[in-house]
Amino acid sequence: MQKNNDDIFCEVALDLNFISQTQIDSALEKKMVDEAIGKQKPLSAYFFDAGLLTEEQIAKVLKIKTRYSSPAIIEDTIAPNLMVEIEVLEEKLTQANVVSKNVWFFPNIDKDIEALHRSMYACKNPAEQTIMIINNKPWWCPQRFWTGILVTDHRIYYHVLKKSFWAAVFPSTISGHIDLKNISSVEIGDIDTCFGSNYVGHELVINTSTIGYVRMGMNVFADDNVNAILASLFAYLGSVGRLSSNKPL
Image: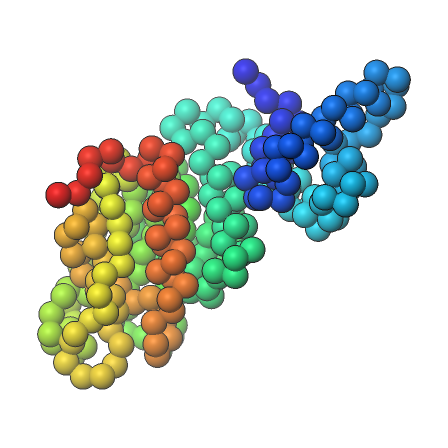
């Protein structure tokens, strides 16, 4: 059944933890009473008048709601509403101050950075929608030391350093991808134990197998929020059935 505007507004606001179901029920009841006597005003006005939503919160909900209502999303039989829910997830992380300048989330993905990842190692299929990107490539970073991750609505693409004690001196990169439907778990493992004191990266572990080292940001030290954001994304993808239901051994 097609959702109406009020349904979508309430669902997005509820997902963002802006309001409760009890508050939604109360506002809908007041709106129904007003409409019965010919009084018309948007549902958001009831939340605003009651002091439950600010103008800024309403604007955020309406921005996401616009995408939620898009025919391109509603008619997407492969990943219905996935991208909207990803946007809600990003907003929740922002509210919790789990943000990073080394991570780009839909819909705020820098097109130049996306093109860089896609051209160097990642997805060449324009039909795949990019969900998240980890790491830009600064001018000072040689290609042989650079690592990154790009996640689409179908796959995770990675460009990592082969795990080796000498990776900091003699790096060897590995690129590849795995379908989300074949993934049961994605984790960031231990920090590197390579020769020297410079930070090389953390273990990227997919289905309990270590793929290689990926940097948590391009700073001197690891950016812990990158790990938290990646974990949150794959926890969400697992909760909505986008990953394999087979548990790792």
